[in-house]
Image 1 (cartoon, rainbow, N blue to C red):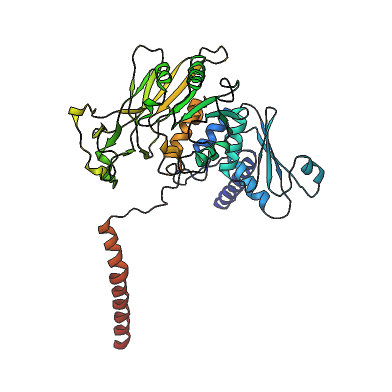
Image 2 (image 1 turned 90 degrees about the vertical axis):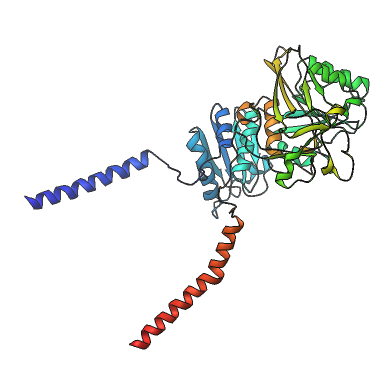
Length: 448
């Protein structure tokens, strides 16, 4: 009887193993136990996938030789977990060279992504960033046209100078945003089908025609981003500020709390906490703003004005001493009319759009344009904040509220005491321990 029970248990185990094996071929369950879920898609990629309604066809033009197909399949498999109707198939360029030449594919490793009659290409090397950027361009439904006002000393969208925005806009172009110049001496107004107009820190007074064109554009329901600077109130931009319902305060915003971070120049404003807004929701990166102009809201306007950038309690608008060689000697002078912080220097505005083809009109004004310049865009979260701002202005809200993603153990942070202990341990204690162990073993052997 006991022998029968043993055989019964063995057969039951074999049957259970077979059932599990069969179910594993029909149903897939994946668990990611890595810290920060680094073996899964980033939240940015998942958000883009949720915007794609309908199937996505991915065609990989890869040679069957080598392991590129396996590597690509491993990348795409993460996407198919989140979107079941995203499919991948391969075409060997050596077997079907005519189709590859027709599509302009000459190398090995190119991808074509098709969705809703649109098509995007990803060149080798393929990774999650390039793949998600292509999906984002599909989700946008084509390129978004952003017109940069030019001709009056503004920051150039494709410029390589320190004050220009070339590095930042290069990242946006990979996400489906195309920058075009807008010179009002050559055109009468903002061209149709412009998704956003950017006025980036003009250094010369704007002509009356340019100001009127911008005001008419805003009144007509156009979205605008205005990067202003201290002292820009004398460049003829007053009518634009009036139609937006904001005011640029005089002076330069300075903050004494930067000294705690090692910044000797109080004109450098650092932020780690932000007022609540869709752009800053879940945003925890530190940003750096040099030479900031404070802003104020004008009442009795139909705009909903929400501040999303605000200085600290130890800040104020300085009128004197900001141009000397020792800015650390700047002191608050209320008698001169300087205003004590916290003060807002970034406003997000929205209202019902006057245009019948849009439901909402959006605008932003920031009292600094240097934070997106080639010099400062790589500092902390400057680039990430700028991308969130453009996403919100272009109406891609789902791409705004995304937490940053990175390996949590890339940097080991040790105090000086801990570093000293590790140094003593490895350079003194561990060698002494090994010498002691060797001496003890030698002593034991001699006694034998």
